[in-house]
Amino acid sequence: MGTIIIALVMFLALVTIHEFGHFIVAKLSGIKVNEFAVGMGPEIFSKQNGETKYSLRALPIGGYCAMEGEDEDSNDPRSYDNAPAGKRFLTILAGPMMNLILAIIIFTIVVFNTGTSTTYVGGFSKDSSAKEAGIDIGDQIVKIDDKNVNEFTDISKILSAYYSKNDSKETIEVIAKSPDGKIKSYDIKPVFKDNMPLLGITSKMRNVGFFESIGLGFKETWRNIKLIFSILGMLFTGKLSFGALSGPVGVVKEIGNQAQNGAMSVLYFLSYISVNLAVFNLIPFPALDGSKLFTNLYEMITKKRVNKKIEEKVTVVGFVILISLILIITIKDIFTLF
Image (cartoon, rainbow, N blue to C red; front, side, top):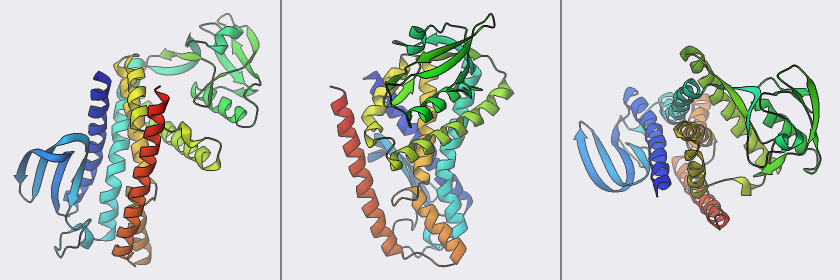
């Protein structure tokens, strides 16, 4: 139950931050906002402040920023529909951008408190193939498959690239340097988890100062953006099955796993989900922010407006497809629990 509550609070926070991005830029752009809601469903509490109603709703599964004329016809000169394409574009873009800003802030907090990873082995996971091969704590991973390991994240990149072209039963050469300077070569067969090859090692962390942690917060956010696009690329090229995706149930399960490692692990996962939410919303698919960004950009370039009725019908179709995918993935996640 505790894990579910944490998951709901996290999801509510991410959506609220996302919608606040739309809200604040809409206000700055002069677009009329009818309601800013935290949560969905029946209204628990509301307060009217000027033209905008601020409400708290019963279901902690989302929220919204209801702009005049966004989803309905309006003759109001300050409606979303009557705003210049550039202002509409920035208003929609602000949602995903707020999720990225949140990710940078939280990544910075996590790095400042836990330090940054190094290429030195700090520990082993259960059933570690690296430990079984003879690698020790304190050893530095120098090369894998004759490719230099400059950062700890290079390990997963090299492994994934190698096993995307080779059989999972094959071993891979790992070069490690011991604390006394000796270079050793190991032939290791990684353990696969969710189709990802792992050596089963954790990094020895290095403490960092405040200003360095800010830079690393930006760097970690960018790394996660590239990781998500890489995963999307593997999905669409067939290198990764859609079964590897997780829905709400899978996310709750992972939060439970991260909670066992402490608050910083939960915060890191929150940042990762925030980046996911930002990137996912930037995809130009109907019913996502990316679709509105695309149509607004089209209007800015061509000075021609996309037919609103056609856009609304396409959005409905896109929404049905998205909900169907979420249901399918959720059912899959439920079955994997048993």
